[in-house]
Amino acid sequence: MITKLSKFAAAFAAAALLFGCSNGSAPDTPQSAKKTDSALPTGSAESSIFGRSVKYDAYSPAENLELPIPTSEITDTVQIEKRLYFLGSGGVYLLDTESGESGKLFDAQSSVLAAHGGKLYCYSLEDSTLTEYDPSTGGSNGIALSVDGADSVEELEVTDSYYLFKCRTVGEKLIETNILIYSRETMEQTLSKAAPDSGIRFYPYKGDKLFSMTMDVIFGAMHLNEYDVETGKSKNLQNLNTAYYSAAAYCPKTDTAVVFGIPNEESMKIAGDSTAPDTPCSLTEFSLSDTDSIVLNRYHIDVKQNTEFFVGVYENSVFIISSADNECRVYDFMNLPESITILGYANSEVIYGFERETGILVRIANTDSEKTALKLMAGDDDFDLFNTGSGFQNYTNAGTFVDLKTVESLRSRISKSKAAEMVVSCDGKYFGVPTVIGNYCTEENFPEDGSSFCYSLAVSEAIYCAQNIDVAEGRYDDPDGEKLYKLFKFLNDNPEGNRNKMPFGEEITLLDSNVYLMNPKSQNAGSAIRFLEYIFDVFNGDIPGIVPESSLNLQIESTENCYAEWRCRPLDLIGPIFDARNAINMEKGKMSSNELKKLAREAAAEVAMRIGE
Image (cartoon, rainbow, N blue to C red):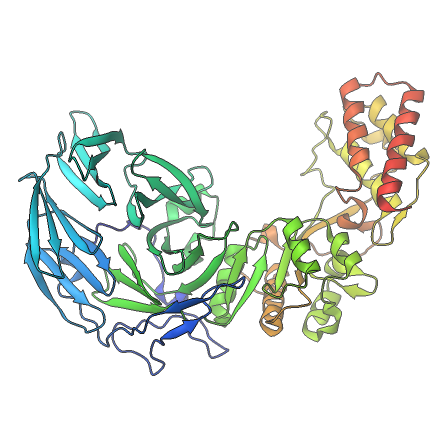
């Protein structure tokens, strides 16, 4: 068992994980049995996005890497540069990934193995001895160290200043997992605390910091953390945006984290994700230098179920060892696959499906709308698509999008869907591809329950906006607030709602949607268009099984009384109406007609000014 790894319970169909590389790209190319003709290169290469370049040393792993012992006998694994070390039956074993040399290195009676500063460390709880071994000289040093009160040592990590032990103590009624930390200088214990999670694993990072992984029990998502060994405190480094149990490695060359993940069915259920069995296993590189959560590289790989993993990095090569495979796989993280970059949210299941089908990597940078707008205005070409749930008028007015009507494959798709066409049409153009198109004005969203946001009140406000505002045309038809007064009076006189007295009727379909827009400066237009085609087909129901049916785009027969929400309810422009509505709610029906008229005039004047009337 490879214990410096995480355990996984999800069953997985290996065949479903292979890329269907219709473009000739083959991201999943393990080098364990035989290297391909395109041997791992050396030299300098762009290893990420946003202008970062990394030079790699001349290094290429050997062909036919053979493990010195079966993976079923491995209890711990560590890496020092080009060499992998395994703790197994009675000793420590070596695999030199450059020469292919493998074999037993020295005898050891230990349950844990660690590496730091080019040296190996083993600990024997029975002998209370920490053994330090120098592979470069073959010399060893035994250090007396008593880990008090522990029945077993589950993990050992060594940092610049400390030894960290994860220990287990078996009591009469429960099993406790504790973190014990000792000074390397004095050998005295400096910290003892209960482990926040009995399944927590640590991974070498830098200085006196370690990586750790935790799961958000509410959302089921994994977080990569920095664990300060001196203080025992953690801080979040990256949200991994996936309900995976994972193994991780730090790459100092690029200041990135390489994470292996496999779906865990139970954790996916916690996250409310019914598509867990179709979620692929992946090897993903995350930036730790950028403030945004950026996926730099990803490989989808075939693995066996109920297995454990070790992940290691040296130069451009990433090594994976699975307890079920009896092999060492090598992935090249310098020769990047064809890729596109999306700013903003993207549905992970859609991304996985697209990557499997095309072999094109989808990078994600979670930026805010202000940063996206600045990058568009600056003409940046380091991203291809951007996604936003609102504020479309800012991009349509500025012209910072590609007219998808000029792309025949997208024009034909969008034009056949009345709902999609209504959402993304502006000035005779299609500014993007919509997803999850729904009707905002439904009793499911706003039940008639007597609250201040019940159906009759919320829909009356929506109808007022739909009939009087169109930001795409810069139009506001009620600058004096006469119609707004009619809405406010209804809200004031019916604080708990009244379906029979809705001032503008209730015939409306208000289409809300996320939309993917294309950067006019995209350097990967062909691949970006393929993604837009794919995502449209998924949410149109033409590619089943990727997203739940409840997420498919709404289909409409007629556009009568139908409006696009972004055109009539832009939150940054109609804020005065919301503020006035809140003031009316606070008064609970006590405002006079004169007060309501004054409130309507002032709110309407502010909206007119914002829209530009």
